[in-house]
Length: 155
Image (cartoon, rainbow, N blue to C red; front, side):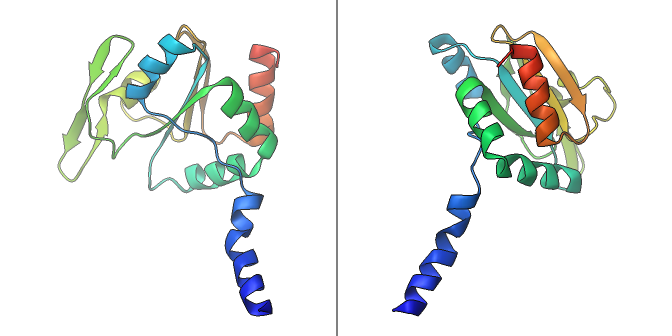
């Protein structure tokens, strides 16, 4: 019986230690914004980016930040080089641009200041009217994100 209890404890331990930022999609965003307008956080990343993986783990580990984001924002995790579906955003349609075995989504290029090759991770914060509030290229630590959010929205 002790072994079963220990096994169950170890199995469910990650559920109690890590929170999870609720993520949405661009197609959900249009409907959500009509029903309940909120600011938007867009996180552009790639599967090969080790900084992106570390950053995601660190952000989800911070319960206060997860709660802050989940309660006050719509959060979109956008895989810039693997997302292949057509996306409608801000009245425009964006498609995947194939380049042999790889490619990039047009929306990633449109959101990035570096139109040739975006820097990952890339953070974009928009107000509830989808106006740009914050643009951040590279690693964003939980404390920095909390400060940015607090400074912008006086939370």
